[in-house]
Length: 513
Image (cartoon, rainbow, N blue to C red; front, side, top):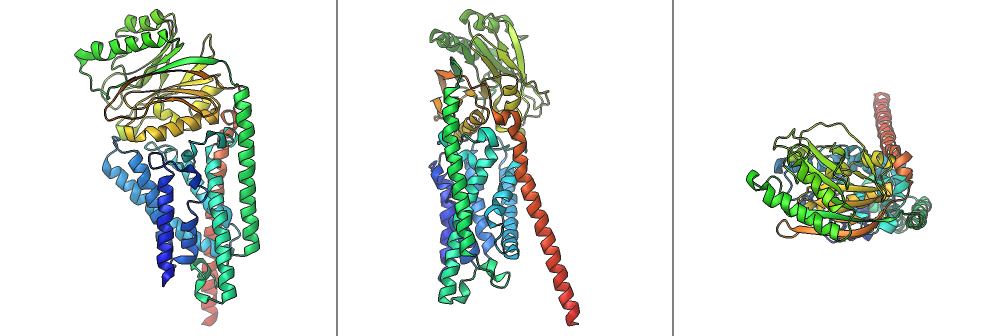
């Protein structure tokens, strides 16, 4: 009778551990390789068979609730978040149900990788959605440890998530095998968990479990060793340092009356740019949506004069109008005040009402200090934008942004991962809440975090340009589809095994007749 209660405690432990790994809830990233172990043991050896998938669903709900709380304050309606939570929990329940049966049918042969393939494959597919993009990826919680994530610049971020899950399942498999060995030696028949009961008492074999865990640990050692070598190479091959400035405007979207645009937006931006130039800044970045007019048509001479008078490269984002289809853009000016180009934001944030459609222009701007590109806010949450810009020569990404306070640390993690993947520096100017400057190795150079009200800030820092190579930016992006393919193979195998077992059951029934 104690086993179900122990199973519930294990489920609660895994749920709490996942919450504690999240930014703003502890950031205990080092729990990731073991966070799911109690849940897996409970699923297979502690909870009654009918409740085992529900235990996994509870942990899934905790994970999604954490993500929802990180996104608190967003413009997404509550019903959308609630609906996504319900769908996510239902999907997790169904996957856990299928996982138990597949393990029993295959007698643990694929246990080490079956759920990691499914989890990461679903992450890749869900990362294409227009609401959350890749925000839900488990690997992002490793952001505080940039020295350990460097292989993503070759294999991509999904590979790190896969490795973390393999470690969880490898450790859990050994624990389950040890429990089975104890039960067998003690002849405790009811210690066979739900997976065993599903296939006539199949127990987890100890020797293969030891081998599986050894493989998982060896992969982790290789990953960490490669990461240390890669980070050393990146640091040795960084380009010259450039002094960048990001202006945090301290305002909220469209909160400035039209008759106050000059005094409350243009004049403070002018003063901040002048201050940045006085501190030696060569590149100044303003935040997303900061100009409610097209600076090529209105205040054109004034905005160009700001860049020219201060001798800086200037990124000046703008959105004209309050309509969903209003284009979101960034004007790039040279130190002579001439227009170098206009970047179009590609990925509209539908949860915030954006509905524009613009061609993707992966522009890179050569300068006397190196080449930089621009990628606005949500574009950095996907894997398709920045590699194209880096492929055109950019070694630094200027990132105008507009987010809500609860999303600050999550977006910081995304910045760090895009910087490491593409081996480029990042400079993010946020409209009101959180700005940052990040080195190509993922080290955070400067950072502001949300306060009670939107706050005016100016960050000025030296940051080295990235090296001139990134395997991920060149050839690494297709590798993510390996996990989708692995998930597809496992799903096909499950369907085939289910069909075969059904056919065998039907045949046995006919023979009895």
